[in-house]
Structures are given as C-alpha cells and as structure tokens.
Length: 82
Image 1 (cartoon, rainbow, N blue to C red):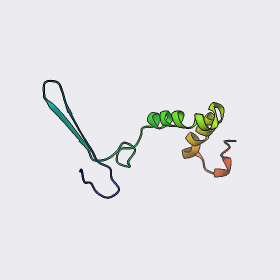
Image 2 (tube, one colour):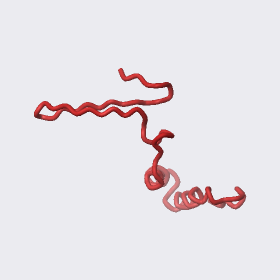
Image 3 (cartoon, rainbow, N blue to C red):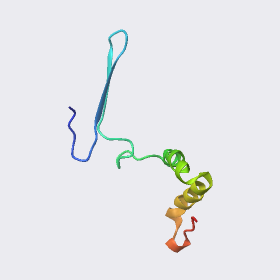
Image 4 (cartoon, rainbow, N blue to C red):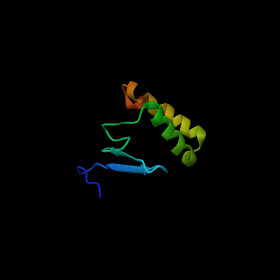
C-alpha cells in the first residue's frame, strides 16, 4: 500500500510490456489538487461535461458565463445568471 501525507492521494502505476520491460510512474498528488490545478480550458471542459445534463445546455451556458465573469465583478449584485 502506498502511504502519503494526510489529505493527499498518491498513486503508483506499473505497466509491463510484452517484452517484460516494466515502466513505473509515481504521482504524489492528483490533478486538481492545489499544487496542480486545472487550466481554464480543462475547467471549462469539465463544466461542459458535468453541468448541461443536469440543467440543460442553455441554462449551463448562462451559469458558465456568470462564473467566468466572477473575477472581474466589483459587486455580487451585478451577477445575473438567471
């Protein structure tokens, strides 16, 4: 069993090819952890995969548009995603 610091999820993968050569990779953190965040494109792709099935494509577009404007807002009351 691979042990890691509390709150972290390490993973080790070992693959052996047909010639018997083994390749191993250890990753101490997951993609999306604070030290390896999603890029903006990855985040949008994940949003587009998960949100529209629950709320519909049109509503998801409205929500995404509002979310991507958050960093520029000076007042939360300016947020309109209805």
